[in-house]
Image (cartoon, rainbow over all chains, first blue to last red; front, side, top):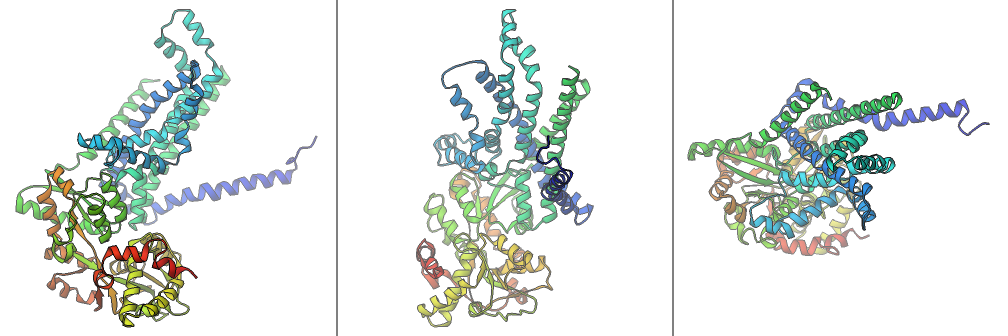
Length: 275
Length: 339
């Protein structure tokens, strides 16, 4: 039987199309970033990379990721566990609510937080009386990043945990295992790779987040500027090499993340084959 | 997990944490001042601030640090209303400082009388950036309404820069034809019809004109025009300052409620007063801003062509009137653009 697309010409054409599209839309722009970063040679690149402001932007970016990932890791596991292992009224609604940060534009998320925690906001006015500053400071940036990235871990875990079912855990319960032992010895090993995957996605997004943080950052140089904001700032400043240096840094982080992901996938694949 | 990977993880985490924490403690200054400024003043204040810090250290024996935030000055005003704790503002729009008084009551209504020259340590005007040898022969505002002249400037609705261009064209036309409003409207219609691209901000307009090569004239602040010319090649462009033009003030003030909370009132005032000092005025002039200091103006006279500058308040009454008459929806601008 002959299927559509079986002809050698069609196949070649489709492959060529895929290659051209990938090159045009992915490879060339990505290469362009690095080209622009090095456009004026190594010295300006290095100078921009090691400037105080860039160093502080890197520091803030890492700080945000470092705080966001553990929070969402715990939150994601808790949520997935709740949704897949128990039935309670409102379970489906909860599952839908998890997706809100995906559905809402990050800018809207930023504005929501500003409305809530800003000087004139409902919670903000109370906090302001106690001299707590969330907006236009790094805690606020962490807060919105947590909001924007909170579905990633849960979204990775829920389908897997649903598919695996609770049979193994039930067996554990009948053998007298406590809740913590159940989680540590049965649940966690089962979801390990999905968890790592979720963390990688959370991390990537936390590092690259622009929209939500730009609304509430106040862009104080050396204080509330993370790498994506730094890219925009330097570009606005006619410092093309600087902008692309920071962009290249972000791209490199993304590539490393993807490499870890690919490595993990390969690892899982091999494990499954040997299992 | 092997011991090595655990160790690696720890090292990475520690490094990241120390970098992040280190970043907030990089300066060990006694007090900090946050200056909320407009978006193209980054390099200017990067040069002014260390000069001030040094002077303050010498005079008061206190080491201070100045932090900067830059964005469109309307964005900055809104952020301050929402709680950005800027001690001082250095804006390029009087209206955006007024917002702080009117909407937030963060500063008194008479803030303009607190410092010399209506609280404007430096000023600028609108200039035309034209291509090499000025092929379309553009010298004054009237030339912009000619046939076959393509203009680029930001949208007056969204950009303070564009607003000044619009007002300068209007005021200059009124000035030239002896306050004949009908003639001015005719002129404005033609001039606005000549606009090739209305970008939302100054940076976008620059890209359109210099990088995409669209238009014969880019209209922007004189200071910007000179910087763009230097950036994109002095041989490719010329800066033209029309004989009659608008005075674009760069207002500064301290934010009373914030300096009170931060305990920085004396520092904030000292900082703003410093901008009027000969040393700062020289730096400002080097960045192509016009200054009031007589000696410095003379020193840089050849940078700033003679022109008659009209103040918004004299030509239009007040900023409030301007916004009401010209820029509200259905206002003068909307009517002029209707064809």
